[in-house]
Image (cartoon, rainbow, N blue to C red; front, top):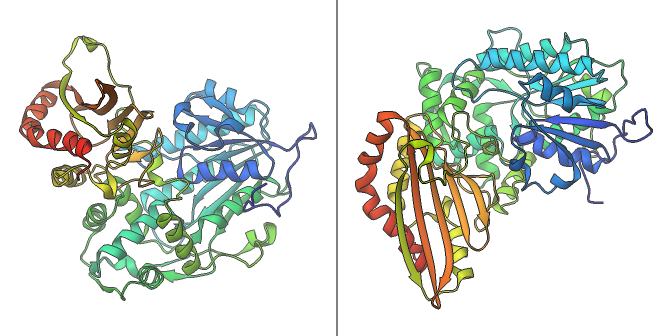
Length: 501
């Protein structure tokens, strides 16, 4: 068996003498996807509750877990998920919701706690946020705290692990740190750069989560989890610069830079969308330092102790450079983004379906052409007109969308369900079909599809952009961007055919 982070921790056994059955929510998210792997590596029986089971198909553990396709807002689905479960992980949040995220998080926790109690679940494990009781909390941290309160009041013994900034390849906090430090050798910042924080490596978070399963049933309550370094955000950026081999950054705090302005700035410079950046930045004003280290007495450190910040950054960068990032913050779907499949009915819903179809042929093999298609986007670009996609991405970020900076997980290979710039990979049928669904902000739904086949000894590439408008604004949008199609789409299909970008 491959080494796992929690191999030296005891295993909780169920009444039937087998390892406990564990329910994981949020399995498509950054922490959840990694936690499932660790639980399986430790021998636990794992069940996951997801709204769209097809989004799990690219995880290497998908055939080793029991999947409940359902919604945590639906009590009936929760009841199915909780049947015969010993321990349940609560890794849900509504942070990306446009409005009302605090109310939705409270309702989610209430429903979860009630169903867990009815099913006689023996423990809930919740990953929350470290809070500073001395200052007014941001909406994000306040909601995290309230979620913990609701779960503990459910009547089910609850372990709440409160983490600060999580450092690991693909985490939203790490991506913010990485892009700010790499892109801005000189920066003016809000005064929150001087707030103290206690970052923790993702491997240590996972160890605590797995360890919480086997704690004595009498243990319950909230526990702060942090790494060995207490540091300001300014010093975190300088530490990142040093580990990454960059020159020391010049950081000039400006007291008048408001959270709204600074989150807009973070949203433009980093891959994190404005809405998520705004809620994370608002939390940085709060000092998040562990109240005590009591959790370390209950769940002992791994050999070598907790991971220092510099080492955590080094490990994360190595994963990024090797394109071995297991999960990313962008794996979670974007609220409000379309999730419907490509409409194939020509009279789709009785409405309009705009299409832009381009065809090119080449003497190159189907396999060679497919390699070019599957490597599209990210640092590889789209064509000689990549600048036009970058302009569209910039506009999307100005409006609060994801823009292009989510990039690619791997420079050459895609998997269904993952994010690619401002697209979501909807369908792959190697080496013939790649379909991308747009997650950029627009008044309608859009797809970009590539079909490769062999015709009369030549390889034919059919590139089809489709747009289903929503209301009058959707029709106006299509005709406003239509002039750009005249050089963007031909440039892209011809670049694929000729192997030039």
